[in-house]
Image 1 (cartoon, one colour):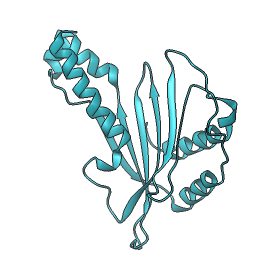
Image 2: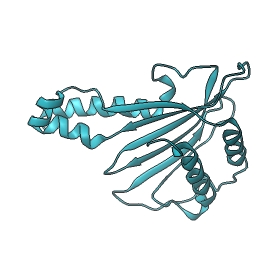
Image 3: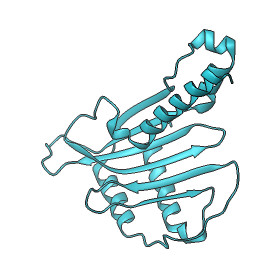
Image 4: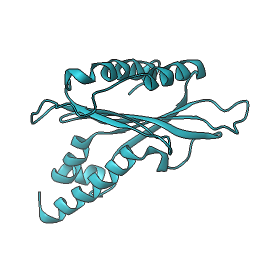
Length: 182
């Protein structure tokens, strides 16, 4: 990759990570009176990077305000190809905007309430030592309450001490992807 392409790649990756880590900043904002509540992510070494942000209805909500799930997907390999392969660059453009897809959809309020309740009751050994490796998949979940938040991330299967949050994560992803493409 030429020096200019490396700079473009760094800009592109920074922009993609900002969108993945802060989906609430991506315009347009979801409809209704909702607030960011829980974010999950899955970043694969050789696959797409996905971030899900669950917006829950605000205290001063209207009767039609429902939970909104925002899914952000980035395929780093597509952008690497576009920046490094001349024919791909000519076809798709040599620019430093990440190829991101964003989808918002509502979720059933009762399922979201149950999922949130289950998350609040998980007890974790937060200073567990995880596995190490080179390639693989990173996972995580964070709560976005401004008065009491938490963030847990792990690589591949993670340590046994995180089994309860991994089980919850898998159930949440099932709810998030039910009837929707990831």
